[in-house]
Image 1 (tube, helix red, strand yellow):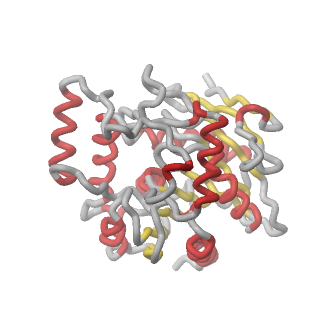
Image 2: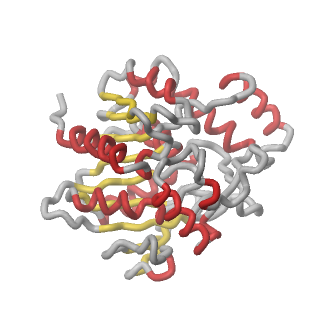
Image 3: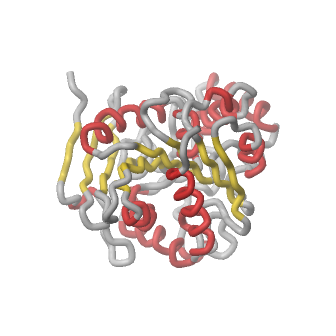
Length: 327
């Protein structure tokens, strides 16, 4: 039985459209169903630049949603790329996995691989021009790096920003914290939220000292979108989510991981990141056999939402990487 793909064009109410963050022209949005029957929201945007360069498949971070990337989508389109993106399971406009809508939950980190495979088969291959470039941020960065070890034909290159390769402040280190959380899951506590206070809705008043971006306009744009469509937001991650994420980070930190990467990779990390551990990206970066890494000075975690000089460095790295000849 074929999996369901529901399309709407124009995007209508599927995508938030507000004065400070309007839907880019030409957007087509809808829903598709993964191989394990989870309904995910997606959107496709045609290129606006004169030269055809393929399609960027954009994979978001935890708590994010399609609307947050409108400006970044426009930047890729102007370069000649179509853009295709979707909300990860359990967040944005996609199906929630628990009765508590604001809980950030996933049973296994490998479920994100099911999302990406289903998106590739149902949306990218039939509807988008090749070649395909995978671009992931934070959680999406880890998803993208793991994908690069699983299939060499899906994507030509993988570009990630602030990949979630390590988390700060773990009370017992990565392995010890994962062990404790696995015990909690065994005891039936996998859907218990972590991070007290993380479920509160962010507002513009939270801008000062925030760990995400130094750009107040871009920060405010995301807050405006959540104010208009609060159902897109999620809060604290569950025990199971953190445990599963640590499992993925452990795999990416293994000695064998760099040689298992099947396509060229470029990682950019933020020097002032307080959400993920930049040193973990550096440790993997120096071991890459088929890729590059760079640390952007002065950048906070969300480099694609940062001030113009920082965004310019990220896009310069991307531009150079996708035009680089493969050896």
